[in-house]
Image (tube, rainbow, N blue to C red):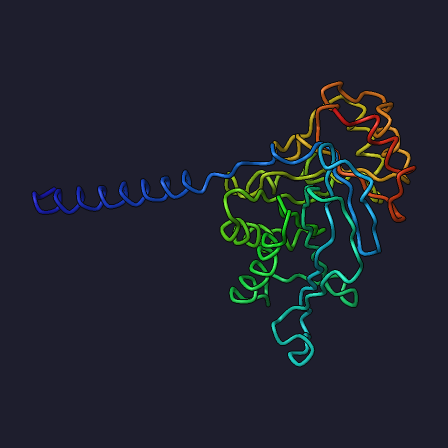
Length: 288
C-alpha cells in the first residue's frame, strides 16, 4: 500500500470511529429511565365509561385506551383516509383520582375486511412517520408516565412494526418509557422482539388471555416454571378477570409459577367496567 493510500485508509477509519462515537454518545444521552417508576398494578381501561376514582394512586395505575389507529388496506380510499390511515380518539369518559399514574395506550388495527392484509408493501415512510407522531403525541397528556402500543402484528407485519417502534422510540422524551403488549408466542418461541435494536422498547407485556389455539401450549410452558425467553417480556404479565388461566395467576394458584413472578408488574383487563368489588381482591393479592 502506498503512503497516500495508507493516509486515506487512516482518514476513513478515523471518520468511521468518529461517527460510531457520535452514535454511541447520542444513544447514551437518550437513555431512558425505564419502567421502574410505573406502579406494580395497572388496570386497563378500554373504550367504555370508566370510574376508577376508588384506586389509590400510591399503589396502582391506569392504562387507558387513548386512540385507535387503523392501518390502510390495499384499496384505501384517499377521500375517507387522506392521511393514509384513520385515527379514532377515545370517546368514553375516564375518571381517576388526582395523581393516578397513567399509561396512554394506542391500539393499532388492520382493516377487518382484509384478514390477510400486510401493511409493509404500501405504507410509505411518510405515512409510517405520521403514525409514529400520532402515537408519540400521547406523551403530552397530563399525568401520562408511559406509552403503550397494542398491536397483534402478524408475521408479515413484523418488519413494519419493528421500524415503527424505532420511530416512536426516537420521538418520545427520555423520561417516557415505551411499552407494548405482546402475544405470548412472541415471548416464548418467536424471536422477533429480541432482534429489535437494544433500548427500542422498555417492556413487552405477555398477554396471557384471548390466546386462541395457543392457549394449551402457553399453559404447558407456564407449568414448566420457565421464565419467558425474551428479556423484554420478563418483568410484567397481562391477564384478564374472566379466563381460568388468568384467574389462577391472579390468585397465585397457577401450578408451576415461580415465586419470583410475584414481583412482576401485573396489567389486568376486565370485560366490563371496573368496580371496587372487582378490583379490591386484585389489590389485596398484589399490592406491595
